[in-house]
Length: 378
Ligand SMILES: [Zn+2]
Image (cartoon, rainbow, N blue to C red; front, top):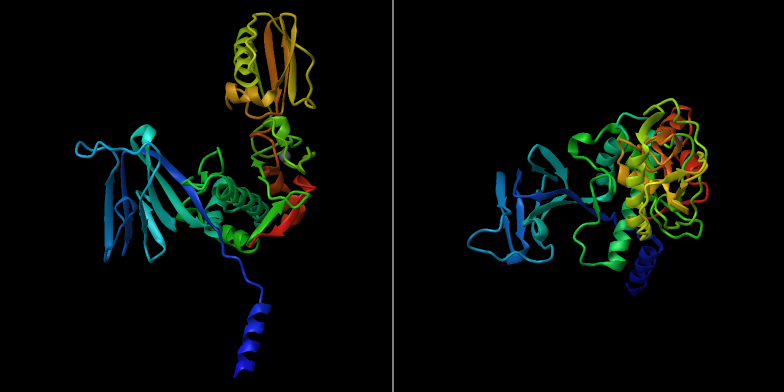
């Protein structure tokens, strides 16, 4: 009897333990005065009162997020107020249906509520792929995007666990992080792309899990994170990409007055370089697409500023990408550029073209991340 018991135990130990699929907490809406959530057999937990309740059948629950006359108390830090889920696996907020759980947080600054969707990573990716790419794109392009987006979210979850346990969400559904969708954005291709890359992430050359970036269209070459944001991330290279040239936004150009550039440069120097230089006499030095920085004189002082910082202030209308050349002629500034987005990491339109040409997602990823390695995270 004892022997059989030992054998069973050894046999169980020999089976590798499969890590659970992590759950992502995604901020889906901010500063709401009122939230109405609907679903079948809803399970509601009010964390602030430590109370749970189950409703039978279809139910609509309304939360008034304005601080009421009776309870002026509004916590100074964000607080998880309520969690709502349904055994059907779907829950609605307005017209939008979500998988997983909806969580209501207080937003003290705005005296309102924020809404978070707690959702398993793989389900999260099936909606995201339609928003970040397009649910009808070739599966190999979607798979490359799935690995990149999974890595980004996975890194955020791990970072949250290591640094700040109090954080009530991992990332925002916005351009700040990555845009995810709702139940209606799931397609056969997005489901396949998530399933066929289940748990796969990219790691740096040393094996370190680090953020992986992507953008819409590089316009000829990708950029390294340090060229755009300043921080160094291991493994990144600027790679050539001729694949996105025929799709998406056409090459763009603008003219603007020298005074406009002067005021933008003033603001860039103050905000990013803590430099109080003020001058009206700006002279641009020769620029090329190879340069991720602009060299310019304000009076007799030479400044070197990142093109991406100028884009942050000028906005995407004026500077759709960081891949541009700026020249000056008789107090008139001429900007010519290619691409759309920050330019770091995976070029989505390039990935689309490569997938159409028969490249696999692994080949696509190794083009844009030549030094990164693939790893199964769970
Ligand atoms: Zn490209």
